[in-house]
Image (tube, rainbow, N blue to C red; front, side, top):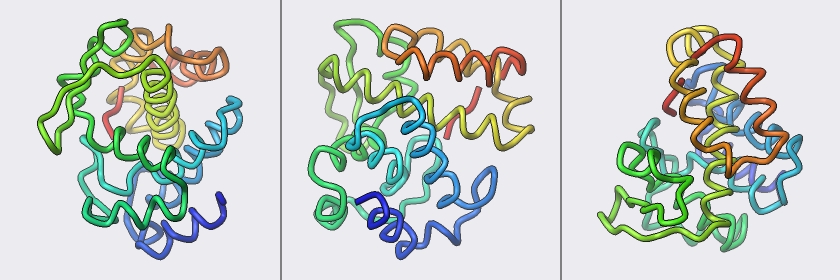
Length: 183
């Protein structure tokens, strides 16, 4: 299924879009690989591979309009697609600060809707965010220099939601650079 998802991202043009550290497709593949290395379940790895399909609050280029969500669902399944939508829809400024709290409020930038996410959604979201941002830090020194300290502060707030493997990678990648990113 991951190969099919990568092929779908390729057909949507991800291999042609510039992104820190190469192309968007390269980034998506690396995010999936980080999640796999951290022991993420297949659904989360698929979401990592497709996380930018609808654009994000930090990377507005959408490969697929929201009206075509069913196409992505057909490739990666409903659960993984919902994670992709949640990641894309997140209003980061309004959501990030309280995400680790039990009563966190998630703000959907597409609809304006707010809701209290389940603990599993908060964990998945934090893990995907860490993989996304860590990849940027590891592949682009300018990103690391500019954003490292802020990213470490963010991921430290997310620590209760992160796997031990993800947290160790956060410390390794951001601890020495001191940087943060927002893609």
